[in-house]
Image (cartoon, rainbow, N blue to C red; front, side):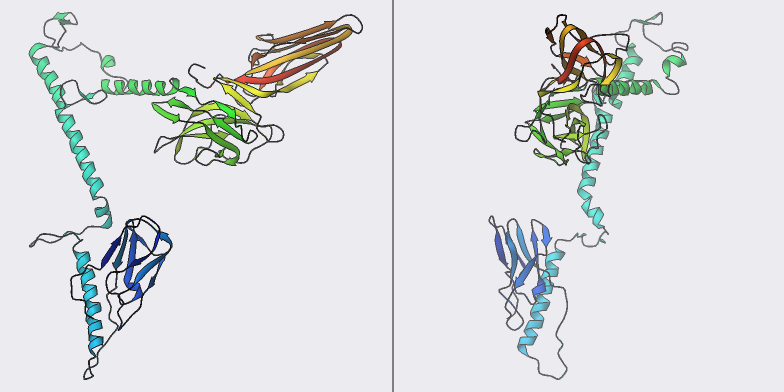
Length: 485
């Protein structure tokens, strides 16, 4: 056969269900003559089936396993070559001659197809030389040029009192200000520095100290003030709404729930639309139910801190768990917003179950901080609660005196208050004077502020048979900037 009709040697398909075979709707002379793109990306994970007659196949197919969907293009990609040679004086076989011409025609058709896609210069002009980067960046460069032109127009033409950027106005604005000042003085000013009428600057109106700020100009001073204000707002206007930390109902020993809420900081916001579950027994991975630990493995009897982080590209909220109270290892592509809570593990490396409302965290079951029965001088002790940040530890006390002549008291107070003070804090006392008499006393939960290392002050005074117990029922995490907590 002879390929004489116009042909761009391309067959296109758009399957919506997984399809394995795609026919080449043009003659093929070798299995290597076929290329395939799927959604604009060339693929090589296919095989070719074809039957050849006189060196030509008209039933060639590209076969994929498994099947594919999308925009599929089967195209001829024959590398120009010649595999036949006719000898002088020998008989010239018509089929051999047709095959040679058919392969040559196919190569020409493919070359013509690709030529029409190339850059063209008008007749009479030399074509340019463009690198792949020049072509790839053409659209971006055009958009950048247009953006620069638009900005230049704003700097030149923005109307009066319309800022190009905060604090900076166009040349048209200042031209109008200058024209007004030259003709009428500064609008709204009837006198200046003791002089009535049009304001005309004179020597001595301003000192160099008034005009400059160090070695800079007034504009430098204003820019510095604006930067200071922005930094101050970013530091002090952080706020947290929701984002409380609870034990996960399905896996309370290994997972926490971070409730819906928002973290605002430095003009940015990270929004958690629904409860996010993060595991403490696996390293961080994006998504609810996946790992939350920034580095290492979970440890026994350890305080962990829960942070809000934010994708730098999409702004999407995520949660992170770290043993560091202030410097977690933040995953690539995310930025730290701030801490939202605390969780901790017991001696078996399991999370201690908790629930949280606002800033108040309540343990599902109170834990014993310490017990005793002997006199204890005033001293800082480790209360057995969270360490790494200061909290208001919620502690209740129980004391029992058994007569005769039993008398004792247990006092706990703020680790920041110093040893000379005994409050604010919690106190419990029991007395039993007669033989066989028992006196018991139980104090309610009272918040006692800890040092960052978890210490508080304790003193116990005992006479006779006296025992005491202190229990932790939760804490108030006052350092997270919660709104309405």
